[in-house]
Structures are given as C-alpha cells and as structure tokens.
Image 1 (cartoon, rainbow, N blue to C red):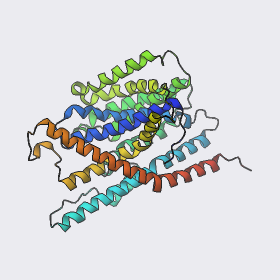
Image 2: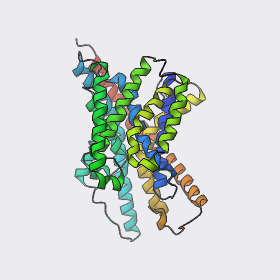
Image 3: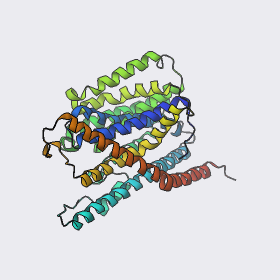
Image 4: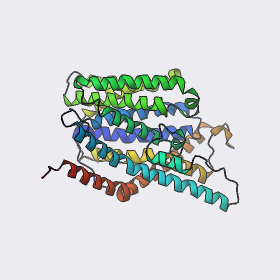
Length: 374
C-alpha cells in the first residue's frame, strides 16, 4: 500500500498512533485473561487518539464563516469516506466471526448461548456510528464506541472552529468537561460494567480531546518557540508517566487530565523531524497506516482467539489458577503477537479491496465539489 507523502515533522505522530493502537490491544489482552493489572491505564490511549485526531484535522475544518457551507460539506464527506469503509468492514467481519462460532459449536454438538444484541436494529445503529447513544449496538464491536464519539465531536466542532480567537474551541472543551463530569457521576452502573464509553461521558471525552488537539495544532502552525522548546518534551514525557500512575488512585477521574497531557506530548512530537524516506520514517508511516485497522479489528480477533484456543475470559477461572507470572507473561505475548499480526493482515486486505477503492471515489467526489462551476 503506497504511503502518502507527509511532512517530516508529523512522521513521529504516525508512529505514536500505531504504538497507541498496539497499547490498546495490550490493555485488552491484559484484561481478557491475565492478572497483569499494570497495563490497566493503557485505556487512556483512546484519549490520545482524540487529541491526535483534532491536531491532524484542524486544516480540514472550516476556519471562517465566509464559505462555511461548502467547507463544512467537504469536511463531512471526507470524514465519511475515512471512517465508514473500515466501520463496514469490521462489522461485517464481526458478523462472520459470530456466525462461524455458532456453526462450529452446533457442529460439535454443544449448546450455544445466542447473542441477543445481534439483531437488525443494532446492526443498523452500529453501521450509522450510533454506538455512543445505542449501547447494545456498541457491544457488537466494542472499540467502535470511540469512532462514534469522534464522529459526533467532529460534527460539533464544525460551527465552533471558525469562531475567532479559539473561543469556540474553548467552549467545546468546557462543554466536553461538563458532559464527561455528568456522565461519570450519573452513568455509574454502566461504567462499572464496561467503562466510560457511552453517552455523555464518551461524547465529553471526544470533545475534550479533539478540542485540545485543535488548539495544539494552532500553536504548532504558529511555531510558538516558547511552547516548542526541547525542555517541554522532557516535561511532557514526565507528565505522561505521571498520568499513567494516577489510575490506581483516581480511577476514571484520571481522564480529566489525559487530554491536556497528551496534547502537550503531541505538540512536542510534531516538532521532531523524521524523514519519511528513512528506514525509521517508513516504519513510523506503516504503523500509522495500520493503526486504524489494529484498533478496529483486534477485539474481534481476540474473541476468535479465545474461542479457538478455549482461553478463559477471566484468569481466575482457568485450570492453572495461581500459576507463576511467567506463565501469564507467555500467555500475553503469544496472544498479543498473534492478534496483532492477524489484525494487520486484515487491515492490509481491507485497505486494498475495500477502503482504498472507496476512498478514491471519495477523493473524486471532493474534487468535483471543489471544481469551479462553468
């Protein structure tokens, strides 16, 4: 798959995006059959994705109200062709994987507990990226909650971005904090079950992260020397480490601090120049190109891995209860590497046969929209 040309200073961001996707995968591996709780804070990397999305998408958003309608329409079309090909592919793969397990279980003569969430209503809601508001649709492919939240945050910031002096963006961030606070304090039963990934708390997280990303891109584009001093890179890395260690004390309240910490890291990383023609640059761009698919596919692949290997969903229910840590470490490495490789293979296939062709059609559509009228 051909790599798009990218500014040298943003190559590192592509690599960080890929590493963040692998981090989310590692978080789910650790939670899905292991007592290695040290990886629990990696769920915060979703907030990194929100920040990075805002940083990257600022140039695509309308910046003035003079040509607001046209620019807004183009932005929405681009986002549709960026998000939906992967969404459709992942949901289709999820359905195939589920029906395979149903067929294989019946073939073996075993009983099977049918998933009542797999109905037409939930599939349609999932395909429309309504997971944030239709929680049962979220359960079809859980990681898609963040794409749902990001999509609605993208739409919400369209009228906010053109407001002068970042007042609109700041208002979006404040609204995000309010929504997240409301969700975190009133959606407690759901959050205890699966985390702050639906409704107000999910939308709030996306609004906060996306907004901070937009502001950091403005600073980067203005080459603010004070904010891009190398000393800030050390400070931002220390803050990321501090954030990682807050989960044990603050729990999900740690999310309040995640976006500004990641925003500072993204700003500093954007100043690091790595040639996209160098070996390191090519690796970074590959990781960035695969990140979306790794994030979207890995949960389904992990469930298939559990089914095929008969791996338990909870480590304490296994026959090797109280096994030495080295047994669990081997379990995690085998599972993590296998799931990553399969997810990358599915990503490459999706890019070649589905995502690439559809996105090329989207580019042609945008070109027609931008073409001067005769």
